[in-house]
Image (cartoon, rainbow, N blue to C red):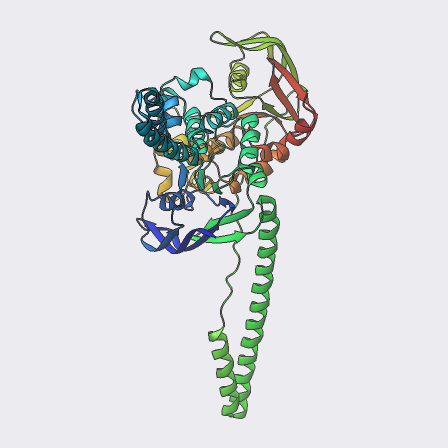
Length: 535
């Protein structure tokens, strides 16, 4: 059964055609992953389906009676007195009203006459049926299960929603959506801010979800686990792949190679036909014979009638090449019996680790375990239990990227770190997709992905031999993640990074250090190795 259908959909913003003849069909039980470069229109598609935006042209059809639930990337603003508990229960006012009326019936039974009681029991029975059909008897169990999975504590339930962090708001909104159990889930980057334990619980939950799911995500590992169809969105259109992300990779490569082969064959055919035209015209001129000219004209018409195959585009890659000016000593970082606090909370107790030159290590742990705090302690280098090795130069990208002055332009920020004239600087910035008027953008107005690209540009100029990256794949699309993976894979220095991106960890990490029970536990492998061997 068709749940959603978009036909010849068009949507523009100014001069940019985000959707341009977009065709999209969703069937009951589909688990679809929407992928594509930043700005390709994935969020717009969700908003159109949810009724938050209108099409300029085309048609949208949604199965009659189907319920929709949308998780947006940016949590909505609500009144300050709204608690987390209220957010989770806001969709169940009808259930609570029915329950209240049932309690009123129950309290009246003892005082009613036989005739009145019979009538009341019939009304009570109707309410019971409605309550059951709406899932009233399972709601408390469902709320408890979802809150447990997303680690929403009793204390958190009583907090104001607006007092939560961005990540906590996303988790609460996601929990609220899951509790409601709509027929169709629209999830826009649902794995942002989820730690790995929560991710794994969420994957299992979605695996058992009875409805239809559409997910926009850059989390390739998550897509492999959850979806059975990939829709690649680019240039306003959709390419469909009937499998998970790994299938998409293989199939897209096969399609590209086939397209190249078809293009080359057509070009050879056209070249041969044009050579024949040239010969026929020459023969016609030499022999003064119009037959040859007519044959040449026929071949020309055949070429004109041909459906031309466009040359397949090769992805433009950022020139990420992390070079180092000088290697460090063999022991880059030593942590010995470190106690680490965050306010009154103890994060690490007698924790120890050694990081050797050239190692690529991922620091993992649950949200709140102290990963970012530990990283900042290393950067401050003020604790005598943390020793930075000789000749170590550090390059750092924080989880939340800020610049000294939001009013400065991309060009202003770049001048401070670039060794060269402005012509070469503009050329270098263009390779990071800052070209034309984009270099005059104020950094305070940049998107998350643009901030990461600018920070990567800064980092490359530093030529540091020890890179510390805190969630470096946040906000960047899959293409940019792959470029970053290639660059870090070829990096000759030492790498310590925090990430929840399991695909990225598998590609880069040679060792995982997991914060557990306030200690640093080492696993000599990538994420899959850690998963297999964790205690």
